[in-house]
Image 1 (cartoon, rainbow, N blue to C red):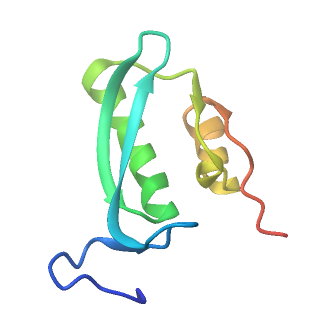
Image 2: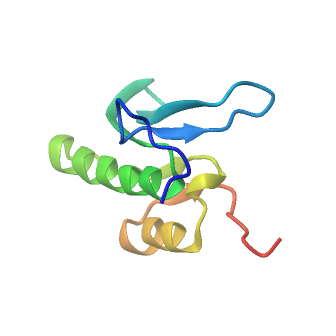
Length: 106
């Protein structure tokens, strides 16, 4: 259950900004072909890690279905570095991840 819920947009998430004011927001996720600098897909999600990972999977699948393009590599930040997501990329999609591992042990 979220700590704060927006009275005008309940789907927006409360984000605490380091060194700044907190605010309600969404996360815009982009799937970009870096070689050609073309945005292949975009999906807006709530600003939580699992929603972003789910969006990544949907964008990859939509790009494959729509354009017949299968990414060889995927670059992303640590939010996408869970063991489950890395395994999905490598074993189910054959995509080489360039993603730091999300380490929960610390």
